[in-house]
Length: 286
Length: 286
Image (cartoon, rainbow over all chains, first blue to last red):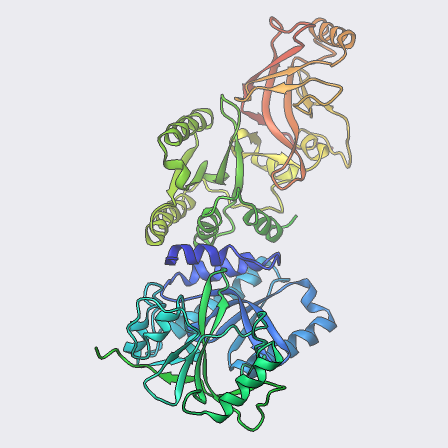
């Protein structure tokens, strides 16, 4: 998918809110800078399950929410506040709300303020221009020296993720791969029950549970991991297999996790706890 | 419907062309001037039936067409050229085509040119700012002194049209009304077969045929009109009952027509020929 396709498809998605398309398209066209990435209907994790926001700028950790009539009942105001606090607490992101019940002039003024803010953020020295042609390439992250949760990193294939850690694969399909650090394994799981594995990630993404659906296999899997640390590494860099928000398959970076040996057992399964949001990358030395 | 509602609803309509919403919303947001009226999916009359254009600026007689992939086959290029020539010939309007098969940068450059052109047109001394609150009011046209086809005039009720010609109605429901000039009648027909009348307007809007569906009534109607010019005026100012492009009922000004006494007969019905695109308005003298 090229930048044009991405932009058109993102702008074509709405949650059927009446004013959402107006506000979102106006912000994007007035910012008028396609070195700034945007995502419509962005999933955000929060303790009480996930939430969708109308527009997200990953480079600025900034979400825009369009509030229509129904948001102004007492019930909704309270629910929105809880949701907003959850998102801020879980991610540290900022949320700006656009009140779409006002006049067109007042809506436009709010949008003007959002646009000014984004243009100011764009001027920061730390700004990395969006480049869709390289954002899925391993070399981008090798050059950067790290992969960080804050950068919302995802790859189209397992080999691209592997090649950030010293590999030079042209193709790779297995759910695990080696890492230059002997204690670490690269892991590409489906983090939802998938028939064979009953995996789960907590809404705050701090805990992953991994368990085979079959009880006998689960027991063998857990005990073997707990016993044999050399063969079954106790640290994993996790790239979860997900559907991207345009329906494409992606392997999304989730962080570095470590096995919780105390709480893992054959009944619960293996419990993995996040120990870092950022991991070092390695160039291929061959 | 206020301006906000109008803008949101117009921008919410698309012909399911992939890039249309992008191009249309980008033009509107970058022009960023709601004294400029716009219509999406505007009907345009042409000899071979009507055509739809993607975006129309009535104050500038300017249409924008978004060309996607299918427009670039030889067959479509030819068909588009015929269609375009038809529209230009029938209306004198200008059509600018935006080629949406190019890169996003090239699409944006074309849009930038359209936006510049509109901003230049906006500076003309003759520019009348769009004001949705007054555009359906009789007083606007009384003050202007005339109603002209070029201004794309429509009223929400029959009384509003009547009140442009010296009446002071609070309500009026009949399909005909008097005019200060004794030779002229105001007429508010449905210009399509409607069960009682088999009316028709030609695609170029120069000819209206009026005939009762019932043969006996048609004969009586036609002969009585041809014989008694005092009772049945031979000139009519026509406001056709139509669905506006947002689904609302409107009485749209079509011009001043005169009865073609030579060609009218009980078989064909009454034939009305357009004799003017502009009519004088009158203030109420009471």
